[in-house]
Amino acid sequence: MAKLGRELKSQGINIVDLSLGEPDFKTPEHICEAAVKAIRDGFTKYTPVAGIPELRAAVCEKLLRDNGLSYEPAQVIVSTGAKQSLANAILSLINAGDEVLIPTPYWVTYSALVQLANGVSRFIPCTIDHDFKVTPEQLERSITPQTRLFIFSSPCNPSGSVYSRDELAGLAAVFARHPQIMIISDEIYEYINYAGRHESIAQFPEIKEQVVVINGFSKGFAMTGWRLGYMAGPKALADACEKLQGQFTSAANSITQKAGVTALLGDMTPTRLMTEAFRQRRDYVIGSLRSIPGVKVNNPPGAFYAFPDISHFFGKTDGVTTILNDEGMSMYLLHTAHVSTVCGSAFGSPECIRLSFATSMEQLEEAMQRISRALAALH
Ligand code: PLP
Image 1 (spheres, helix red, strand yellow):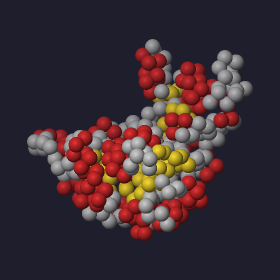
Image 2: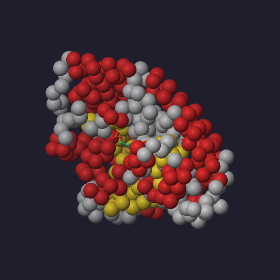
Image 3: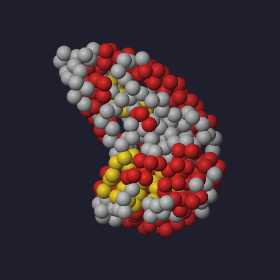
């Protein structure tokens, strides 16, 4: 959709882009300064594959400070983006034919990586009626003798759902009965949380050795282009990830790693201000969507996406275009309202579309007016 939107833009059409998954803010100044200093100091050589000791220690400090989680630096592997951390973990854990449980909606990379590892993704359908979250009963029912891994994100891309401590405790109780199942907990939207404290499933001691925490710098510090992420988990898995990464890419960028230390241990004010701006935009976008007849939307407590259920419009037409499904809706909004979105089937939820509110309030106001008009024309 982003590519199609750019093509239409290049033809002079005024497109409002709500398809992107990255903060529209600049990386905070003090983090940029740390990178400049690293260059000037000549910190431009290969680093140890698993990351510089200073950053692995900073990750441990952060996990203890923010999440109450205790890890040794040897259990932390720094990678070129959280995406590589996920790839390392999934390729290390999954053998051909192993089953991986993924609640929908999910970030598409999860199933693509499972496929790359010759594993089999088994999706657990979660809808807006349960706030797009999996229940312990659903989880228990989905487990088979082949199940090896469960992958989820909280806050979730694309639904913005956030699991509470109690909800995670319910899932943890199921996993405690199935110690052969590992859990990948993708916490990259941790700081984009409007509900309060972030809760990690790794906090439950009885399953901690089953959990791989994935996190990164892209979202919370507006560092998408810097490419830096990390995993924390059992030492044996960390060793496997290090081995794999040593052949794929070696260490993450040396300059970025220095900036990462400053991000984790430095002033968090810019992150807080950015999250506050996202919260205001979320309130506006959700309020606008709720005022459109036929649109069902939850109030996302995290991340920067709205994920409305637009299935009410399937089969309806403006006289020219008939909306058959979510993809049809995304195309209709692009061509009629000139707003780009992402269809929900890209995330395993074909009754929804995803709108990113990581763009300015002016752009969002324009987009919501256009979307309201376009949907009102459907009968
Ligand atoms: N996990 C989720 C849920 C994401 O949405 C993204 C990026 O969109 C990532 C991981 C990857 O982040 P990174 O930029 O660190 O590779």
